[in-house]
Length: 395
Image (cartoon, rainbow, N blue to C red; front, side, top):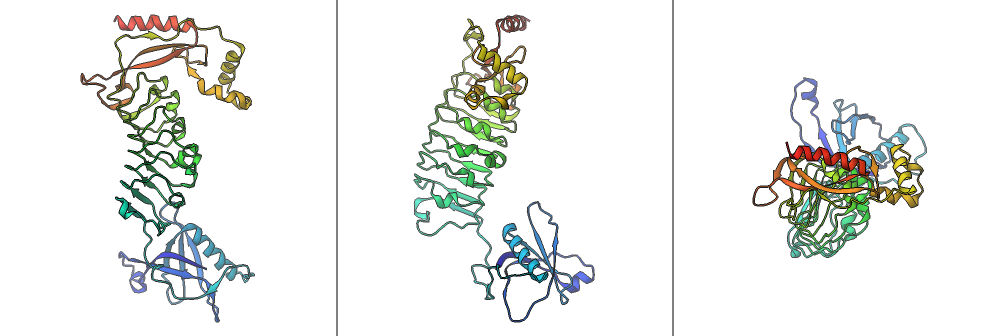
């Protein structure tokens, strides 16, 4: 059993004199194996300075200052468990121990953490990708499929696949436990896999770039990526944003220029952005406010029940057949109550500076005001809102 680590060697003379100096670390291989004479060492597990790292301190009589090892946490845990069994004189027959052998040259080399492939000639067809990769860039390679050997790179933090020929993605993104940036610009994607909205990516993904693809509908799964800070979805053919975009509480940059957006949903007011770009979209405000549906139907029993269930926070008691109805929920602009199908939709106007610190002008006239869709749960709320809106317009 062995573990590959960076070994920091401390000088005994300098340490005993209390002199501080910057030591260097070297790549090494530590091995536990069968040997004729037993080796007695003292092991101490110390806390690490960086979150997620484990430190192994080996102290001997000849080296009281010790040596500090930084290694893969999983491999180091196995290493420590084996040493503990030996130290306690417990049965070690179940351990997979091999004879001690000199380390190979490739084992002493630092693992490759970054790789950039910028042409199809550079793409590795036969040789595998290093499993230690944290950043992988594959640009202008005509890639048509995301291979399994890329999906198996569990250490990836940045995956850049821009300027390729991807039409679909495999439903296996839950394998990326540490992915922070996913760049898929300039491809032919029209939808994203369900696994893109998994819990692991919801916590880790910070940047998503879907610029210049073929999206006509905003992928609802993106609303599950609550840690997302930058979303680039410009140069597509989207006609609207879902109201669920309000779930992206950490979103700071939204770039959605050159689409077919005609109106913004109510959820936009809950965003707090540093920058937004909605230029080159048909966001016209010539005739506002515009009532989309004034003759509101009388709420049926299903509508009234859903409103009361949401108000009482009893959504967990709903049968699974009714859960899809919750996605239709809107918040009344006047009373802030919930409504579903029985509602009045009104298109009004909103200044983008209310939700973003810096704004790219919507058109060549430097306009920052865009049409904005609101919902009202009853005719009473609609009339009250209309009176207030009329007074504000005539002030």
